[in-house]
Length: 510
Image 1 (cartoon, rainbow, N blue to C red):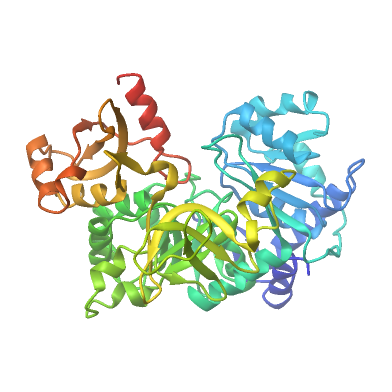
Image 2 (cartoon, rainbow, N blue to C red):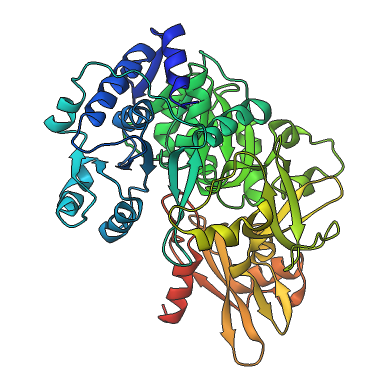
């Protein structure tokens, strides 16, 4: 089962429906998008030496060509390798070489830096800028029929961020992508022809993955003209494209909530704001619900199990009468349909409700393994379960609460301190916009808690005020021993706070 059949089927039934827009400009109907992808697929398979299953790297900002190249890869029986466009050229080079990619598609902003790599990496035959004549030439072939593949064949290689070493490529098969797509209808929304998905977050990540269930149902896709995230632009776009769905990192939701344009949002303009990739703090979430209503949906997943481990539904976000409403909002919800989740100790023994351990999960949409890395695959998938590296606890009703990545745990005087608890307390203060808590070396206690704080404009709480809000909400030993006020927290392209960079700032005495 080739995942390309999703686009082919929609194009057959709804050829004239608008499929893709760039800002306010229509780009493709479903018929023209499928035709373009099929012609490009023929161009790809016609390249010297290109064989079924070969990898094609997509090193691009969000743009209409992203959809063309991704679906052309699958139409041609090739494997797409979407890559974060904000990486360093050497990081691109590593992924190109690690995958053995034969071809890389790039946008003009990356062409100068990446084109020379075709002469440095043996397997990389060419780098094609999607805004140049060479790309148009590849799109002028007679359409290629969808190629047959095995459902276990790799379709998408998802490279991890590499915060603990070289990035690893999670192999997502055609079956895994289809299973992820069907879980969307089970747990998120049943979407259709009148819906739209606005792609502000990178298509190389969750926004691109969740475009598949929308493609399969004929929804419209919109790439902002800025090719990124700008709250004012988002509010303009939802006025143009009704029933809008948007993927956001929690920091993006917070920025939209604080933007003046949020005041003009009408009920129903947002069909779904699904958020994930990092914790959404309770106070931020309550403010977002007050602004946008019950359209928020939270998903917890990893690249190794794409977007699909647990979920907090829109109904759960709206159930204010539930006696544990706020407590539930601090969780990442319950296991997704067909997904098993356990909390285990270091020997993979099950822990009782409320105990903290590693989150492990099992499902048919899990990755096949890491590309060309059997040792890491065996370690992460031991016993048939995905070992996430996340620490959490599960209550008796099956709601999962994440604590932190195991590497972010702070151990002070032999006592575990989970940064998120401290961050949640600090965010209660109305002057705190964002914060991040890490451990700093202490000669007697091993580590001590320190906090990096971004304040709201015109509001600068004193350290004594922050101490007080902590002491009112958490144990005294968890209170930060130092506060660092900064203009912005360092974040990845996906909006995740980079605690590794905060640690480097500490080392440098910044």
